[in-house]
Image (cartoon, rainbow, N blue to C red; front, top):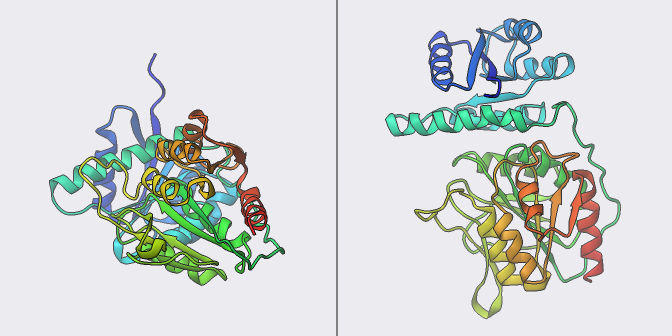
Length: 345
């Protein structure tokens, strides 16, 4: 017996875009477009009447823009939303994710190869709604820690995430004290040119210093480094054994860029039994092999629990390796990090 098709509502003020997205989605036998809307007001009415499994959304629309649409949708008819964004408006994506959007996809690059890759990525995200938690309105409330620790040694924690990751990383940073002796290295699956905007947004909204990682950056307390889109993020020992970051380009066989597995393996190699890896929400198995490397080095691996993960794919795969020591809801991870940092002083 075949499973039910994923139903989609397409919202875009461009008739050409609506037709193109509809044709693309309906070329897949397991996807059905059940409605199309040209603005946010019409989109809200159709969402309430049709109850689609997922909505594709253009943020720039007349009458009711994408941000107002998301606020009203999540308050009244919570539905997974995939934002379709241009590179020119990449900073708007992260505001949309905070308002409850499920995921985003950059508009396709020119050329047949770019269009085919975009089609495959969009269909993967559409199909992922089958794995999403039932209520997309549910969000962890940040619980800012009052404790601080300014001593050494520095706790370097590698964080891996994919779908649902940007808001999760933000809530993690919001709940950590800025003067804790903790440094975060973040591999978030994200297209090139979006990671800098992501880092800049995180840097503005909280006390942590957040930057896109560059070759030669040195881990420091109160710092978070985001893997640059289209490259990997690694921790390595430089001259004199000093810890520093590397951002190499991907190899031909690399499935994910940035790769959580490669980040975790580099942390295991550089820090041995002092390594910490955290697997947050996401699709796929990236991070599972890296989790095994950290475990074998004597370090600790934590996974976000199904209770709070938007998609319990990556955390589940890590857990299945037997390498995960702790499975925690998102709001408990900051406290666990702070406590671990205090114990190591």
